[in-house]
Length: 553
Ligand code: NAD
Image: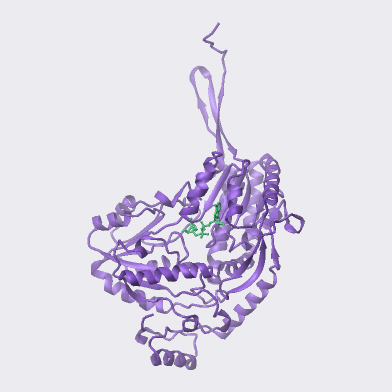
């Protein structure tokens, strides 16, 4: 814990003078305490409480898999179950009944049968149905945003304005590709012979997701899979099943045949059974590199196609000629968004030496103003981490950073009572944005993925030096560069070993651009105009227009 300097504190507009005085007193009296950042209006607290109560009411006490177009009262489940937790409050929301081997087989059987029907639709009909699904998701933005917020403990502000739009953008884009993007080619050959290629669906595909963006992950896998005429079985992360279940129902209501989209609930073993099933043709996986390697190895046994969207430890390079405020905005978006639980986060922030002090001052000043608290409150900017276990991991890295000798410039692990004043949130897993200054490339906090709001600041002197240091990582998911010299921006973008790059921005993922990782961060891609190819098998057909010339009598 470090002391705070109240001169940085600015009175927010929405807070009454009396409350502000209490906060100032609290901090001035005891400078080891962090500021209570949850300045919010009474109206928004009431709205958040109502939003929470209303959405929790809709969650059944037991959740089970969605197979063949119906939820699982009708299907067999294993005896295994585990709790679904609200990480913002540290309370149980529901019990998840884990899918049994029988359920998994049932899902595959349903998916196999339904895929035949779906593949027989014209591509234009599939396109119309996906467009329908996109429109329906748009209409249900609030419901999905609330479920996603409850499940992930990420701010409602993000799920409402970011996640759901990303979902319907993808559905509408894939609808367009379904109508136009699956044509083969005609190839003229010798003597009037010719050949052509067909793009055929793979069949039954599996989508295994991580817990940070469960809806986005489910849509980014299911929409292209369906657009290409496949069926899909989704296995959301055990911590976050709610929006995938709701999405599967939405697809069926939009016109996708029952059985074409199934959701199988469970932990790693369930994912393993799906990813090794003989009748599954493709596995699209989002998660850690360690699990990804295992899934890739297992998929190889039956030569399945794979897409791997894995972890990162991305560099964000800021040159002295950058617009300082924009560069600080980018560093904040690259580290604090979604409580820091973003695969592409630019957590290695390289700042040119001559502007580092000014950069850090502004960064701390703006970070201090962020509101930590109830994710359901529209004014909250930092919610809770996903679980107690993950809280332990992130806290441990903060301790490691201190032990390694990095300067804790802001943040650190503190008691909830020093961070948020709402009683019901005291058992949630909150960590404030944390900035380490004067880091070195060999520190663990600089090399390893933390997946929480922990930023490492490093300095550099030359372009050549920073490119080499930025590339010195086994990860290669993303990277960013800030400079007003546009030629330098492009030059660096070409040299950095990363699948997704931003020049003068960070962490945007429009569906029109492919999303992919280099090196250990991934294989294959999601989104972009060619992504449907990854959900098809290509067939090459030779057409003989003459008699056969045979070499034998
Ligand atoms: P994880 O690897 O622990 O789990 C991911 C999924 O795999 C879960 O659904 C889990 O149940 C399942 N799983 C576990 N063992 C399995 C097995 N043996 N076979 C099949 N499935 C199995 O990852 P996580 O902690 O849920 O997610 C965090 C990680 O995801 C971070 O590393 C993050 O960077 C990465 N991520 C990457 C992207 C991307 O687009 N590149 C996006 C989001 C998250």
